[in-house]
Length: 480
Image 1 (tube, helix red, strand yellow):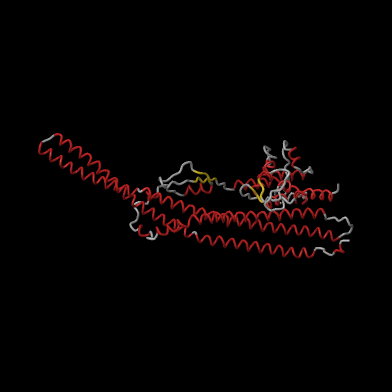
Image 2 (tube, rainbow, N blue to C red):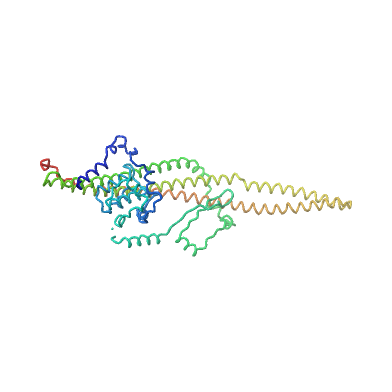
Protein backbone atom coordinates (compact mmCIF):
# COMPACT_ATOMS: atom_id res chain seq x y z
CA UNK A 1 0.00 0.00 0.00
CA UNK A 2 1.42 3.42 -0.94
CA UNK A 3 2.07 6.20 1.59
CA UNK A 4 -0.76 8.27 0.12
CA UNK A 5 -3.22 5.38 0.35
CA UNK A 6 -2.06 4.70 3.91
CA UNK A 7 -2.58 8.34 4.88
CA UNK A 8 -5.99 8.34 3.22
CA UNK A 9 -6.98 5.20 5.14
CA UNK A 10 -5.76 6.76 8.41
CA UNK A 11 -7.71 9.94 7.74
CA UNK A 12 -10.86 8.01 6.89
CA UNK A 13 -10.56 5.96 10.07
CA UNK A 14 -10.10 9.04 12.24
CA UNK A 15 -13.23 10.69 10.88
CA UNK A 16 -15.61 7.77 10.94
CA UNK A 17 -19.34 8.22 10.46
CA UNK A 18 -20.01 7.96 14.20
CA UNK A 19 -17.93 11.11 14.79
CA UNK A 20 -20.41 13.15 12.79
CA UNK A 21 -23.49 11.43 14.15
CA UNK A 22 -26.24 13.87 15.07
CA UNK A 23 -26.01 12.86 18.71
CA UNK A 24 -22.38 13.97 18.88
CA UNK A 25 -22.69 17.18 16.91
CA UNK A 26 -23.85 19.16 19.94
CA UNK A 27 -21.11 20.88 21.96
CA UNK A 28 -22.30 19.30 25.23
CA UNK A 29 -22.78 15.74 24.03
CA UNK A 30 -20.30 13.03 25.00
CA UNK A 31 -18.88 11.30 21.90
CA UNK A 32 -19.10 7.65 21.10
CA UNK A 33 -15.59 6.29 21.68
CA UNK A 34 -14.29 2.77 21.37
CA UNK A 35 -12.41 2.98 24.67
CA UNK A 36 -13.90 4.75 27.67
CA UNK A 37 -11.69 7.12 29.73
CA UNK A 38 -11.68 4.64 32.62
CA UNK A 39 -10.60 1.78 30.35
CA UNK A 40 -7.97 3.99 28.73
CA UNK A 41 -6.54 4.94 32.14
CA UNK A 42 -6.15 1.27 32.98
CA UNK A 43 -4.24 0.35 29.80
CA UNK A 44 -0.81 1.01 31.35
CA UNK A 45 -1.86 0.39 34.94
CA UNK A 46 0.90 -1.37 36.87
CA UNK A 47 3.48 -0.93 34.09
CA UNK A 48 6.81 0.66 35.04
CA UNK A 49 6.86 3.65 32.70
CA UNK A 50 10.01 5.58 31.75
CA UNK A 51 10.58 8.68 33.88
CA UNK A 52 10.36 10.88 30.78
CA UNK A 53 6.61 10.13 30.59
CA UNK A 54 6.00 11.79 33.94
CA UNK A 55 8.47 14.62 33.25
CA UNK A 56 6.82 15.48 29.96
CA UNK A 57 3.43 15.71 31.66
CA UNK A 58 4.72 17.81 34.58
CA UNK A 59 6.56 20.25 32.33
CA UNK A 60 3.33 20.83 30.38
CA UNK A 61 2.09 22.71 33.49
CA UNK A 62 -0.89 20.55 34.51
CA UNK A 63 -3.79 22.16 36.32
CA UNK A 64 -6.07 20.00 38.43
CA UNK A 65 -4.17 16.91 37.32
CA UNK A 66 -4.78 17.58 33.61
CA UNK A 67 -3.14 19.38 30.68
CA UNK A 68 -4.80 21.01 27.68
CA UNK A 69 -5.15 19.40 24.28
CA UNK A 70 -2.87 22.12 22.87
CA UNK A 71 -0.15 21.20 25.39
CA UNK A 72 -0.48 17.52 24.48
CA UNK A 73 -0.30 18.40 20.79
CA UNK A 74 2.95 20.30 21.41
CA UNK A 75 4.43 17.23 23.13
CA UNK A 76 3.44 14.99 20.25
CA UNK A 77 4.18 17.54 17.53
CA UNK A 78 7.96 17.25 17.92
CA UNK A 79 7.95 13.47 17.61
CA UNK A 80 8.71 13.56 13.89
CA UNK A 81 5.58 11.56 13.08
CA UNK A 82 3.42 12.45 10.06
CA UNK A 83 0.48 14.77 10.87
CA UNK A 84 -1.99 12.03 10.03
CA UNK A 85 -0.42 9.71 12.62
CA UNK A 86 -0.38 12.46 15.29
CA UNK A 87 -4.02 13.20 14.52
CA UNK A 88 -4.87 9.50 14.67
CA UNK A 89 -3.24 9.06 18.09
CA UNK A 90 -4.99 12.20 19.35
CA UNK A 91 -8.36 10.83 18.26
CA UNK A 92 -7.63 7.45 19.85
CA UNK A 93 -6.77 8.98 23.21
CA UNK A 94 -8.89 12.14 23.46
CA UNK A 95 -12.61 12.26 22.74
CA UNK A 96 -13.64 15.10 20.35
CA UNK A 97 -15.54 17.09 22.99
CA UNK A 98 -12.82 17.02 25.63
CA UNK A 99 -10.36 19.87 26.10
CA UNK A 100 -8.16 18.45 28.89
CA UNK A 101 -6.18 15.23 29.23
CA UNK A 102 -5.14 13.23 32.30
CA UNK A 103 -1.63 11.99 33.05
CA UNK A 104 -2.53 8.37 32.31
CA UNK A 105 -4.00 9.37 28.94
CA UNK A 106 -0.85 11.30 28.05
CA UNK A 107 1.19 8.22 28.96
CA UNK A 108 -0.95 6.11 26.61
CA UNK A 109 -0.47 8.71 23.86
CA UNK A 110 3.33 8.69 24.33
CA UNK A 111 3.36 4.89 24.26
CA UNK A 112 1.41 5.00 20.99
CA UNK A 113 3.90 7.58 19.64
CA UNK A 114 6.73 5.22 20.51
CA UNK A 115 4.94 2.36 18.72
CA UNK A 116 4.50 4.52 15.62
CA UNK A 117 8.19 5.47 15.68
CA UNK A 118 9.04 1.75 15.67
CA UNK A 119 6.64 1.17 12.75
CA UNK A 120 4.32 -0.91 14.91
CA UNK A 121 0.56 -1.02 14.44
CA UNK A 122 -0.86 1.88 16.45
CA UNK A 123 -3.94 0.77 18.37
CA UNK A 124 -5.08 0.31 21.94
CA UNK A 125 -5.43 -3.42 21.29
CA UNK A 126 -1.81 -3.74 20.19
CA UNK A 127 -0.62 -1.61 23.12
CA UNK A 128 -2.57 -3.82 25.52
CA UNK A 129 -1.06 -6.92 23.95
CA UNK A 130 2.45 -5.58 24.58
CA UNK A 131 1.80 -4.07 28.03
CA UNK A 132 3.50 -6.94 29.88
CA UNK A 133 6.78 -5.99 28.24
CA UNK A 134 8.48 -2.71 29.06
CA UNK A 135 6.72 0.01 27.07
CA UNK A 136 8.67 1.37 24.12
CA UNK A 137 10.63 4.45 25.15
CA UNK A 138 10.02 7.24 22.64
CA UNK A 139 13.02 9.13 21.38
CA UNK A 140 14.11 12.23 23.21
CA UNK A 141 12.57 14.26 20.39
CA UNK A 142 9.16 13.10 21.56
CA UNK A 143 9.35 15.37 24.56
CA UNK A 144 12.23 17.91 23.95
CA UNK A 145 14.14 20.29 20.59
CA UNK A 146 17.80 18.50 22.12
CA UNK A 147 19.77 15.68 20.34
CA UNK A 148 21.30 14.21 23.51
CA UNK A 149 18.70 12.26 25.54
CA UNK A 150 21.03 11.88 28.53
CA UNK A 151 21.72 15.62 28.69
CA UNK A 152 17.99 16.30 28.50
CA UNK A 153 17.31 13.83 31.31
CA UNK A 154 19.92 15.45 33.56
CA UNK A 155 18.62 18.93 32.77
CA UNK A 156 15.05 18.00 33.62
CA UNK A 157 16.17 16.17 36.77
CA UNK A 158 18.11 19.25 37.93
CA UNK A 159 15.12 21.43 37.18
CA UNK A 160 13.01 19.35 39.54
CA UNK A 161 15.74 19.36 42.22
CA UNK A 162 15.88 23.16 42.15
CA UNK A 163 12.10 23.44 42.35
CA UNK A 164 10.88 24.18 45.87
CA UNK A 165 8.04 21.82 46.71
CA UNK A 166 5.42 23.34 49.01
CA UNK A 167 3.20 21.01 51.04
CA UNK A 168 0.02 22.24 52.70
CA UNK A 169 -1.83 20.27 55.39
CA UNK A 170 -4.26 20.80 58.26
CA UNK A 171 -3.07 20.91 61.86
CA UNK A 172 -4.65 18.02 63.82
CA UNK A 173 -6.37 20.25 66.38
CA UNK A 174 -8.08 23.61 66.29
CA UNK A 175 -6.73 26.40 68.47
CA UNK A 176 -8.01 29.59 70.06
CA UNK A 177 -10.58 30.58 72.64
CA UNK A 178 -13.93 28.84 73.03
CA UNK A 179 -15.89 31.10 70.69
CA UNK A 180 -12.97 31.95 68.42
CA UNK A 181 -11.60 28.55 67.42
CA UNK A 182 -9.56 28.54 64.25
CA UNK A 183 -7.86 26.00 62.00
CA UNK A 184 -4.10 26.11 61.58
CA UNK A 185 -2.47 25.19 58.28
CA UNK A 186 0.93 23.54 58.19
CA UNK A 187 3.05 24.86 55.30
CA UNK A 188 6.26 22.98 54.54
CA UNK A 189 8.79 24.67 52.23
CA UNK A 190 12.65 24.92 51.90
CA UNK A 191 12.33 28.93 51.28
CA UNK A 192 9.95 28.99 54.33
CA UNK A 193 12.29 26.89 56.53
CA UNK A 194 15.13 29.31 55.76
CA UNK A 195 12.91 32.27 56.62
CA UNK A 196 11.86 30.69 59.93
CA UNK A 197 15.50 30.40 61.03
CA UNK A 198 15.96 34.15 60.76
CA UNK A 199 12.59 35.32 62.14
CA UNK A 200 11.23 35.02 65.67
CA UNK A 201 7.52 34.24 65.55
CA UNK A 202 5.27 35.14 68.49
CA UNK A 203 2.67 32.53 69.43
CA UNK A 204 1.13 34.50 72.30
CA UNK A 205 -2.61 35.02 72.47
CA UNK A 206 -3.09 38.52 71.07
CA UNK A 207 -5.94 39.18 73.51
CA UNK A 208 -3.49 38.56 76.35
CA UNK A 209 -0.34 40.10 74.93
CA UNK A 210 -2.12 43.34 74.01
CA UNK A 211 -3.57 43.93 77.47
CA UNK A 212 -3.82 46.42 79.01
CA UNK A 213 -5.12 48.28 75.99
CA UNK A 214 -4.31 51.94 75.29
CA UNK A 215 -6.75 54.28 77.01
CA UNK A 216 -7.83 55.90 73.74
CA UNK A 217 -8.46 52.64 71.85
CA UNK A 218 -12.22 52.70 72.45
CA UNK A 219 -12.40 56.22 70.96
CA UNK A 220 -10.95 54.93 67.68
CA UNK A 221 -13.95 52.68 67.06
CA UNK A 222 -16.66 54.70 65.25
CA UNK A 223 -19.96 55.13 67.06
CA UNK A 224 -21.75 53.99 63.88
CA UNK A 225 -20.06 50.56 63.89
CA UNK A 226 -23.20 48.66 64.94
CA UNK A 227 -25.23 50.43 62.24
CA UNK A 228 -22.61 49.50 59.65
CA UNK A 229 -22.59 45.89 60.83
CA UNK A 230 -26.38 45.75 60.60
CA UNK A 231 -26.27 46.86 56.95
CA UNK A 232 -23.51 44.34 56.17
CA UNK A 233 -25.49 41.51 57.81
CA UNK A 234 -28.47 42.23 55.56
CA UNK A 235 -26.40 42.36 52.36
CA UNK A 236 -24.06 39.43 52.93
CA UNK A 237 -26.35 36.42 52.16
CA UNK A 238 -27.44 37.82 48.77
CA UNK A 239 -23.91 38.99 47.88
CA UNK A 240 -22.48 35.55 48.66
CA UNK A 241 -25.03 33.86 46.41
CA UNK A 242 -24.39 36.32 43.57
CA UNK A 243 -20.64 35.79 43.72
CA UNK A 244 -21.09 32.03 43.95
CA UNK A 245 -23.29 32.14 40.84
CA UNK A 246 -20.88 34.42 38.94
CA UNK A 247 -17.92 32.17 39.78
CA UNK A 248 -19.81 29.15 38.37
CA UNK A 249 -20.79 31.04 35.20
CA UNK A 250 -17.27 32.37 34.65
CA UNK A 251 -15.87 28.88 35.18
CA UNK A 252 -18.18 27.62 32.42
CA UNK A 253 -17.02 30.47 30.15
CA UNK A 254 -13.42 29.50 30.82
CA UNK A 255 -14.12 25.87 29.97
CA UNK A 256 -15.87 26.86 26.74
CA UNK A 257 -12.88 29.03 25.76
CA UNK A 258 -10.56 26.15 26.52
CA UNK A 259 -12.80 23.79 24.52
CA UNK A 260 -12.72 26.21 21.56
CA UNK A 261 -8.91 26.25 21.76
CA UNK A 262 -8.90 22.43 21.74
CA UNK A 263 -11.20 22.35 18.70
CA UNK A 264 -8.92 24.72 16.77
CA UNK A 265 -6.02 22.40 17.59
CA UNK A 266 -7.96 19.35 16.42
CA UNK A 267 -9.06 21.09 13.24
CA UNK A 268 -5.44 22.05 12.52
CA UNK A 269 -4.35 18.44 13.05
CA UNK A 270 -6.99 17.18 10.65
CA UNK A 271 -6.08 19.82 8.08
CA UNK A 272 -2.38 18.91 8.25
CA UNK A 273 -3.31 15.25 7.80
CA UNK A 274 -5.50 16.19 4.84
CA UNK A 275 -2.63 18.17 3.32
CA UNK A 276 -0.41 15.09 3.45
CA UNK A 277 -3.19 12.98 2.04
CA UNK A 278 -3.93 15.24 -0.95
CA UNK A 279 -0.42 16.58 -1.59
CA UNK A 280 -0.10 14.46 -4.77
CA UNK A 281 -3.02 14.76 -7.16
CA UNK A 282 -4.22 11.86 -9.28
CA UNK A 283 -3.93 14.20 -12.30
CA UNK A 284 -0.33 14.55 -13.43
CA UNK A 285 1.23 18.01 -13.37
CA UNK A 286 -1.68 19.46 -11.39
CA UNK A 287 -0.09 22.46 -9.70
CA UNK A 288 -3.35 23.77 -8.25
CA UNK A 289 -3.80 20.77 -5.96
CA UNK A 290 -0.25 21.21 -4.68
CA UNK A 291 -0.97 24.87 -3.95
CA UNK A 292 -4.22 23.86 -2.26
CA UNK A 293 -2.34 21.36 -0.11
CA UNK A 294 0.20 24.02 0.85
CA UNK A 295 -2.70 26.30 1.72
CA UNK A 296 -4.08 23.63 4.06
CA UNK A 297 -0.78 23.60 5.95
CA UNK A 298 -0.76 27.40 6.29
CA UNK A 299 -4.39 27.45 7.43
CA UNK A 300 -3.59 24.74 9.99
CA UNK A 301 -0.70 26.87 11.28
CA UNK A 302 -2.99 29.86 11.72
CA UNK A 303 -5.56 27.70 13.47
CA UNK A 304 -2.76 26.69 15.83
CA UNK A 305 -2.06 30.38 16.52
CA UNK A 306 -5.75 30.95 17.21
CA UNK A 307 -5.74 27.94 19.53
CA UNK A 308 -2.79 29.35 21.45
CA UNK A 309 -4.47 32.77 21.81
CA UNK A 310 -7.69 31.20 23.09
CA UNK A 311 -5.83 28.93 25.50
CA UNK A 312 -3.96 31.93 26.92
CA UNK A 313 -7.28 33.73 27.29
CA UNK A 314 -8.72 30.69 29.07
CA UNK A 315 -5.79 30.67 31.48
CA UNK A 316 -6.26 34.38 32.14
CA UNK A 317 -9.97 33.91 32.81
CA UNK A 318 -9.19 31.13 35.27
CA UNK A 319 -6.38 33.05 36.93
CA UNK A 320 -7.83 36.55 37.01
CA UNK A 321 -11.58 36.06 37.06
CA UNK A 322 -12.61 32.65 38.35
CA UNK A 323 -10.08 32.64 41.17
CA UNK A 324 -10.71 36.29 42.07
CA UNK A 325 -14.48 35.76 42.11
CA UNK A 326 -14.00 32.75 44.38
CA UNK A 327 -11.60 34.73 46.56
CA UNK A 328 -14.12 37.55 47.01
CA UNK A 329 -16.88 35.01 47.66
CA UNK A 330 -14.70 33.41 50.34
CA UNK A 331 -14.01 36.86 51.79
CA UNK A 332 -17.75 37.50 52.07
CA UNK A 333 -18.25 34.11 53.73
CA UNK A 334 -15.42 34.89 56.16
CA UNK A 335 -17.02 38.22 57.10
CA UNK A 336 -20.34 36.46 57.64
CA UNK A 337 -18.70 33.90 59.93
CA UNK A 338 -16.81 36.68 61.74
CA UNK A 339 -20.08 38.48 62.51
CA UNK A 340 -21.63 35.20 63.66
CA UNK A 341 -18.76 34.66 66.10
CA UNK A 342 -19.12 38.24 67.28
CA UNK A 343 -22.83 37.71 67.91
CA UNK A 344 -22.17 34.46 69.79
CA UNK A 345 -19.62 36.20 72.01
CA UNK A 346 -22.24 38.76 72.95
CA UNK A 347 -24.85 36.09 73.58
CA UNK A 348 -22.45 34.35 75.93
CA UNK A 349 -22.82 37.35 78.27
CA UNK A 350 -19.52 36.86 80.10
CA UNK A 351 -19.38 40.48 81.34
CA UNK A 352 -23.02 40.45 82.41
CA UNK A 353 -22.52 37.17 84.25
CA UNK A 354 -19.50 38.56 86.11
CA UNK A 355 -21.34 41.75 87.00
CA UNK A 356 -24.28 39.75 88.34
CA UNK A 357 -21.99 37.48 90.37
CA UNK A 358 -20.13 40.46 91.83
CA UNK A 359 -23.43 42.11 92.79
CA UNK A 360 -24.71 38.92 94.47
CA UNK A 361 -21.43 38.42 96.34
CA UNK A 362 -21.45 42.02 97.56
CA UNK A 363 -24.95 41.49 98.96
CA UNK A 364 -23.82 38.24 100.59
CA UNK A 365 -20.76 40.02 102.01
CA UNK A 366 -22.86 42.78 103.56
CA UNK A 367 -25.20 40.20 105.10
CA UNK A 368 -22.26 38.18 106.46
CA UNK A 369 -20.62 41.26 107.95
CA UNK A 370 -23.83 42.18 109.77
CA UNK A 371 -24.21 38.61 111.02
CA UNK A 372 -20.56 38.59 112.16
CA UNK A 373 -20.98 41.84 114.05
CA UNK A 374 -24.11 40.51 115.76
CA UNK A 375 -22.31 37.30 116.70
CA UNK A 376 -19.36 39.25 118.06
CA UNK A 377 -21.63 41.45 120.18
CA UNK A 378 -23.48 38.41 121.55
CA UNK A 379 -20.24 36.63 122.36
CA UNK A 380 -18.82 39.64 124.21
CA UNK A 381 -21.96 40.31 126.23
CA UNK A 382 -22.69 36.75 127.35
CA UNK A 383 -19.22 35.27 127.07
CA UNK A 384 -20.91 32.65 124.83
CA UNK A 385 -18.55 30.07 123.27
CA UNK A 386 -21.05 29.14 120.54
CA UNK A 387 -21.41 32.79 119.52
CA UNK A 388 -17.63 33.05 119.28
CA UNK A 389 -17.56 29.99 117.01
CA UNK A 390 -20.26 31.56 114.82
CA UNK A 391 -18.18 34.70 114.50
CA UNK A 392 -15.19 32.65 113.38
CA UNK A 393 -17.26 30.85 110.75
CA UNK A 394 -18.58 34.15 109.44
CA UNK A 395 -15.05 35.51 109.28
CA UNK A 396 -13.93 32.57 107.08
CA UNK A 397 -16.88 33.05 104.70
CA UNK A 398 -16.20 36.80 104.55
CA UNK A 399 -12.59 36.14 103.59
CA UNK A 400 -13.65 33.63 100.89
CA UNK A 401 -16.21 35.95 99.31
CA UNK A 402 -13.78 38.89 99.53
CA UNK A 403 -11.22 36.85 97.58
CA UNK A 404 -13.87 35.86 95.03
CA UNK A 405 -14.86 39.49 94.61
CA UNK A 406 -11.25 40.50 94.02
CA UNK A 407 -10.81 37.73 91.43
CA UNK A 408 -14.09 38.55 89.66
CA UNK A 409 -13.34 42.29 89.57
CA UNK A 410 -9.95 41.61 88.04
CA UNK A 411 -11.54 39.27 85.49
CA UNK A 412 -14.29 41.82 84.78
CA UNK A 413 -11.66 44.45 83.98
CA UNK A 414 -9.89 42.02 81.66
CA UNK A 415 -13.17 41.10 79.92
CA UNK A 416 -14.10 44.77 79.48
CA UNK A 417 -10.73 45.43 77.88
CA UNK A 418 -11.14 42.31 75.74
CA UNK A 419 -14.54 43.58 74.62
CA UNK A 420 -13.03 46.90 73.54
CA UNK A 421 -10.18 45.10 71.78
CA UNK A 422 -12.67 42.80 70.03
CA UNK A 423 -14.70 45.78 68.85
CA UNK A 424 -11.55 47.47 67.60
CA UNK A 425 -10.35 44.30 65.84
CA UNK A 426 -13.78 43.84 64.28
CA UNK A 427 -13.69 47.40 62.99
CA UNK A 428 -10.22 46.80 61.49
CA UNK A 429 -11.48 43.63 59.76
CA UNK A 430 -14.52 45.44 58.36
CA UNK A 431 -12.26 48.26 57.14
CA UNK A 432 -10.04 45.70 55.40
CA UNK A 433 -13.11 44.10 53.86
CA UNK A 434 -14.30 47.46 52.58
CA UNK A 435 -10.93 48.26 51.02
CA UNK A 436 -11.03 44.94 49.17
CA UNK A 437 -13.88 46.34 47.08
CA UNK A 438 -11.19 48.17 45.10
CA UNK A 439 -9.84 44.78 43.95
CA UNK A 440 -13.06 44.20 42.03
CA UNK A 441 -12.22 47.08 39.70
CA UNK A 442 -8.77 45.61 39.08
CA UNK A 443 -10.33 42.21 38.38
CA UNK A 444 -12.59 43.57 35.63
CA UNK A 445 -9.83 45.77 34.22
CA UNK A 446 -7.63 42.70 33.81
CA UNK A 447 -10.54 40.77 32.30
CA UNK A 448 -11.16 43.45 29.66
CA UNK A 449 -7.42 43.88 28.98
CA UNK A 450 -6.98 40.15 28.36
CA UNK A 451 -9.99 40.05 26.03
CA UNK A 452 -8.62 43.02 24.08
CA UNK A 453 -5.25 41.30 23.87
CA UNK A 454 -6.88 38.07 22.62
CA UNK A 455 -9.07 40.03 20.21
CA UNK A 456 -6.02 41.77 18.70
CA UNK A 457 -4.14 38.48 18.44
CA UNK A 458 -7.07 36.74 16.74
CA UNK A 459 -7.64 39.72 14.45
CA UNK A 460 -3.98 39.66 13.39
CA UNK A 461 -4.18 35.89 12.85
CA UNK A 462 -7.28 36.10 10.64
CA UNK A 463 -5.89 39.09 8.71
CA UNK A 464 -2.71 37.17 8.01
CA UNK A 465 -4.73 34.10 7.02
CA UNK A 466 -6.94 36.22 4.77
CA UNK A 467 -4.00 36.86 2.46
CA UNK A 468 -3.21 33.15 2.41
CA UNK A 469 -6.72 31.95 1.52
CA UNK A 470 -7.12 34.62 -1.17
CA UNK A 471 -3.92 33.41 -2.82
CA UNK A 472 -5.18 29.83 -2.98
CA UNK A 473 -6.35 28.60 -6.42
CA UNK A 474 -10.07 29.09 -7.03
CA UNK A 475 -10.42 29.06 -10.82
CA UNK A 476 -12.49 26.01 -11.78
CA UNK A 477 -10.67 25.67 -15.09
CA UNK A 478 -7.38 25.41 -13.24
CA UNK A 479 -8.44 21.98 -11.98
CA UNK A 480 -8.40 20.10 -15.27
